[in-house]
Amino acid sequence: QVQLMESGGGLVQPGGSLRLSCAASRGSIVSKLAAWYRQAPGKEREFLGRIIPSGETSYADTVKGRFTISRNIAQNTMYLQMNNLTPDDTAVYYCTIDRYWGQGTQVTVSS
Image 1 (cartoon, rainbow, N blue to C red):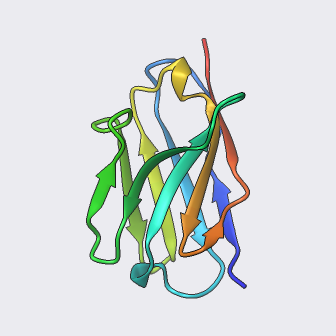
Image 2 (cartoon, rainbow, N blue to C red):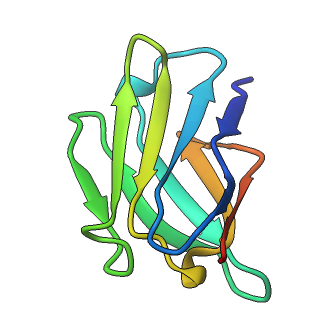
């Protein structure tokens, strides 16, 4: 069983930045498909972007140019760098690696 531990969420002002982390407890993330999703209150879970084993990334149009997915293979951790945040980005953010999901971390964008 693999556990994904998310961290980095919190309260940020509009225009600010946050970096979320997703650390895998075992195994190697480099050979797995990994992705980030979010779910806002009353809305369906939304795909944000993914990173494939080669390291290539792709993003949903809603976050393209503002969000960046990366990974640290040595630390078995995936990241989501979020810039120029707006209140519409307020949601619980989830990482997924292979078939495993993190517990979610709350991101609130408010002044």
